[in-house]
Length: 179
Length: 124
Image (spheres, chains in turn brown, yellow):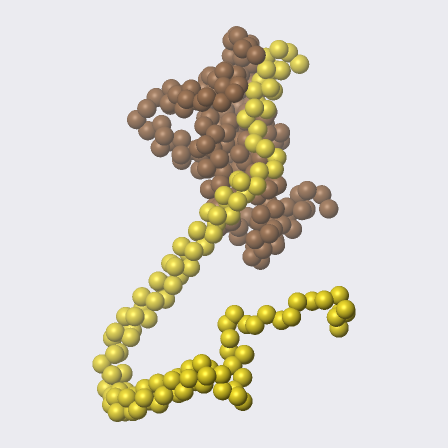
């Protein structure tokens, strides 16, 4: 049984009320969803909180999953909607990228300088570009999967990834590497 | 891979969540549990509110129809209470005095412990 088939079985079991099957889905996809949200939102605590909300929403709306896309894409689509809504409310009344950068600048974890560099680079991208780049370059999603997750046309995703990657490399290439 | 590409890959890796994270999974389960409780309460309210309204609306007619029962209970009630009190008092006295022929072991809580297992008992 390949991984996609396993997802299908787990979703079917979870729909029948199996908490164990849903727990396995969470365990299997939490890394992808959290990674995506962390890169898009910048703030890890907010991202992990939204990731938990994403799984709760998936559990509540399990019947809405028709199997047209992969479970990973479906979960990231829910996460994307939540992230957009959250970021909109966060950015209301504040300059978007400055607010996002400020959230990152409060970080005191090890490697914060490096993450600041990435934050600066990501802040130079639009939100959709950032999401597309996060999924395709960092998360290993195919362009089709990313298009399903973000609800954007395939051509737009390809363009976002190409331009976003070029911009990131330019910003990172110009800056000093603190490590 | 060029220098900025290596740096980007290294930075992406720092944002990666752990592959296995029981704390995160427990957090999701707890949130789902809370959501389920709220849903059950909501469903209960959905049924209880109309039921209360219906009972409130029909109570005068129910009260009239069951008036005889209320009157009967008022007359028989004290007698029933006296009988029940007497039975409980007798049962308590018998238990305290440990009267022969009455086995109260089955009513004990916690139940009496069985004899500990000994190797010579075998498995039967």
